[in-house]
Image 1: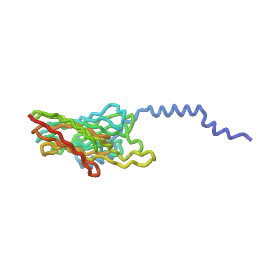
Image 2: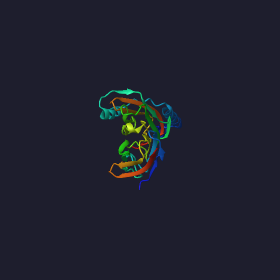
Image 3: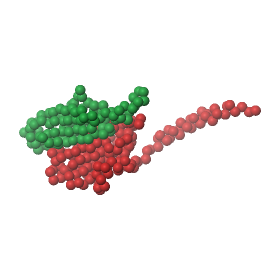
Image 4: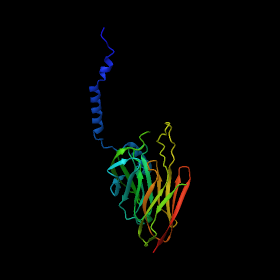
Length: 158
Length: 106
């Protein structure tokens, strides 16, 4: 009778293991696809602004190209607005398509702010394009986004 | 208990746009982390920030768990009159911390 006990060991030979290792490196090295804005960002925007049209422009979002630490990523947003009584930014809402919660923060301004800009530090759960939507006093909505590569993601354990 | 650090210019010209910085020490526990025994650490975050200048809220913010620990804000206001600027933080349980800075407008 042939000896079958050696069989399982053979299926996991050193060669196979090396191949497996090389394969996983390949998978890790393939660039991540560009993230489409998921539905929960859309839902969060709908909750805040209803079904009003959001146009692109007037919003400048700044994030580092590579965020080494997802727990604290410097972030700034600047809106192109004269900030006068007749024409000013009412609020800015920040959205993340890859955090557990799409809402990141909301900033309210008035004409007395002088400049519609704010900077803070945020947490990012992975490589993504953070989005900002600004609401003007006339009710029009403008958006902008910035992409960042996150090396160490925040909230890995969910 | 919570330490607050502010950066407000001492003087400004009337109509000048001044930069304000405010930092408060707070863990901003997101509610998504687990402790050493695998138990979920409950959420504990500051949810609201307000800056009052000359009897008016000039800037305010709503925070979600995605704001990093020790929330740090940089924002702007137009100098209109000499007075105090009050900075106020409120957490999810309603606890409040505040600090003030005085500004002389010439």
